[in-house]
Amino acid sequence: MSAPPTVVRWGWATTVAALSALALALILGGGAPPPAPPGLPDATRLPAWLGLLVGLLAQATGIVTVGFALLAAGLLDRPPRQARAAAGGAAVLWIAITVNQIGLAAWELEGRADLLDSSRVQALVVQLALVAVTAVLTGVVRWRPAAAVAVLTAVAALLPTVIDGHPRTADHPTVAAVAVSLHVAGVASWVGGLAALGWLALVRTGDWSGAVPRYSRLALVAVMVLTGAGVLASLGELDRPAELVTSKYGAILSFKVVLLAGLVAAGNLQRRRVLHRTPLLRRHFVGLVALELTVMALAVALAVALGHTPPPA
Image (cartoon, rainbow, N blue to C red; front, side, top):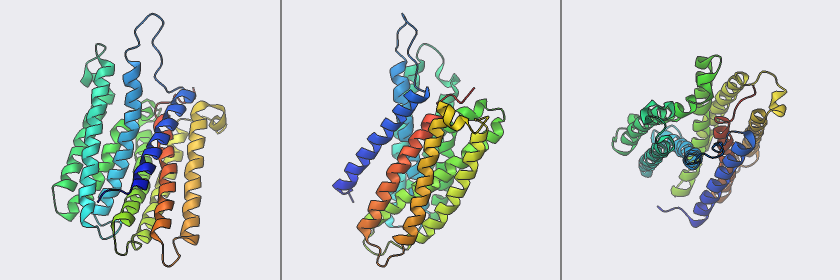
């Protein structure tokens, strides 16, 4: 089933908005690839920029893969036949983007270092292997528990490039890595689950609203996990609460927190005022999902920017 034109236009608009937010946050926060010193060629800046933008696409595709894997495993609702194919297709797209990331890293490092000596490339290779396993479990294996395992491998595939950032240089790297990993897992379940739920509302001709309460419970746990882990990770980067407004890193983090808090408040309001209506109209629900996913995409873009923004000294 092909996506309606309105959904396609929304997808492109959201993608452009998220990429623009990432670029702006990198420039204003000081995480953008620096220019070469005067008199030297600037051959690495373009692949570095492209690598950052493609990295956001990889994270977004990975989050969507997690959501479809949740649906294919029956953790959101009775899965439609297309759910496993959708999860496998998302994983294959993620593989293609990861290969592109490795190619951009090779371009950036050409003549400066061996490719596999880079911790970033090593993280991408691990990511590629885990995504390949996810693709096999969702697109080839027809045993339903395999889709549940695919949820774990998809979440795990999101982690290597994230852990390769600030957690490696933190004062307590193990604590930082665990906190960031839990935060990413919470975001992937929350955002990916919502994307899968919106897709389910589009493709299922019969009753689909029964999945909403189950997703709401999952989202509540995910938000609790990502909030607690996010606070713990932030404590490792900020020495004083004032740095939330006095530093560039803190400003980006504060804006991300505002977006997430707004999403939580909006989700609570929707559950009380909209989702309990009978009947729940498909177009109203899909519109709400599209709005929430747009804000979530911006929050994910800021999270990616934070991974490359220098924390306060």
